[in-house]
Length: 191
Image (tube, rainbow, N blue to C red; front, top):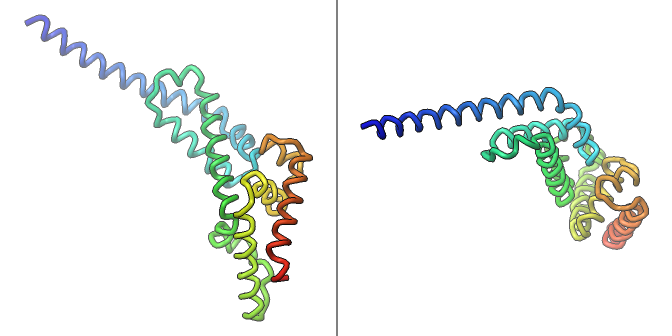
């Protein structure tokens, strides 16, 4: 009979240990949140996202960090948090680069419609032109498209874009010029 009792005790102890580990992890992430949240948001904004998007990405990174089941993460939890946040920011930028005009539909109250006029025919023409431009941008390589969007839409400098994309400022300039030429060639019949 004693072996069964000791077995049951071990099962209870294992459950208690797991619960304590989970609590310790939550406390560690909470402390990290309090210490690193603003710094993490600035880090994400440096990747090319605005403050609202950076806050969303930071929140998602903390949630993912809480959901991890790996025990060895606690040794380097801050580094892991930054890696998660950086990957999420890059994914968000890639989605935007693939379809840059989707955000305008959702943020119509924040961003005025380009070239809005009282003439419905002109509005229709402008909307068609935007669709053509989106197709033209979609045919560009990812880094070229992203450099163009960060420069023209976000208003970032070549140096900021170079840091985000991890390329030289002169390469950013070449990408932006390539995108402008490409769009002009694709849309010159519409202009």
